Length: 439
Ligand code: NDP
Image (cartoon, rainbow, N blue to C red):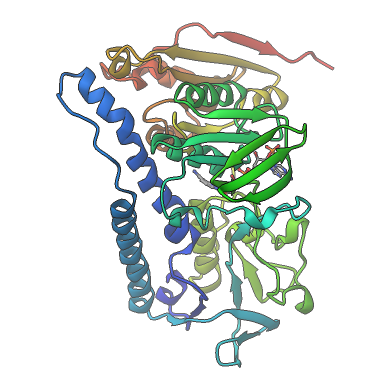
């Protein structure tokens, strides 16, 4: 769309629906499911606040029909916007045949172009070594289950595993998450990882750590899973969420000289250009930061640079992000362990409290906040939060951190009361002052 708006003659080849994984079978339908699943708790909250509500049954079919209608609407909007900008849409799989040539498989014709952009995303990875792996489903299929399962077992403690554990737990399934490590959400701040897991456990999600699947068997009434320690579990469905790999298989890239790296990712430079100068790649297929807004920015920078006479480089530093787990996690910048290996001295400010809304109900929900400061410059290098609103707040905190906000700026900002986020501007003494030994 952006390239076409710059005047380029553009064709987009798409074999499925338009809008990308995020819109069609990712972030957007997922977030609608998060909202749907939160009502079980909200009915209870309503009663605590004096409303005489009784929890009705959840109608999975009715919800799925509305959700799918919304996705259909968005798919159409993407198509309209492409067409309005003057780009043409080719409803077919395409493969690369040369530095300037693409074959359209539906009618077996070739088209030539000055530039080719690869934006094929990523695809669920399955561990083919596990006997019975063909019985699992991925995040592609989980949206289309015939009903809410009684028992769901999830493999993987990353974004997808954790988010769907919360969703199906909220919808009433018995959920067990099996993770090969000893804590979920590797890569996030340690304290936040623990807080998310504790909050999920509180809500009823079961965890099995330090195990992997060793066998899956279909039985007359579902699936039987054997774990690496011999323990067995039964399930109606297994969501396999052990990562997504760049979607490059069969695209013809290596044959034309495009260098692929780990997991088949397209290797690109800072301008998203591959080893073949006329071929570029953006998004998850490059395995940089696998997040939709990052892919959009990379694509926009490509179009502006190549067609808009405006060289732009996507800045991959300090990307705010959220995990829509229950409780939610929002984050920007360095974790505590990254910060102390980057800066010689850091001050860590924390807040841990029961938020007003749920404390009133007698619930144990906690909000955890952490602000990490480079002690030498007073610059805030990381902000993390677990709890209600964390995703929304991470966007705003992201602006501040990107601007180089100092702890003194937090301190000089007047609190908005009563909110949970006011705790960010009332953090007094650091909880920890970490100093790296001079070498
Ligand atoms: P992640 O990379 O987030 O997590 C994969 C999980 O699977 C990790 O817990 C990992 O363990 C585990 N794992 C990896 N390999 C194996 C293996 N061989 N055996 C057992 N377990 C394994 O991937 P997801 O599939 O959850 O999500 C894919 C991508 O989608 C993410 O990278 C994210 O960028 C994106 N996404 C973003 C969302 C958001 O922004 N809210 C929401 C959903 C997806 P370990 O930690 O030990 O490596």
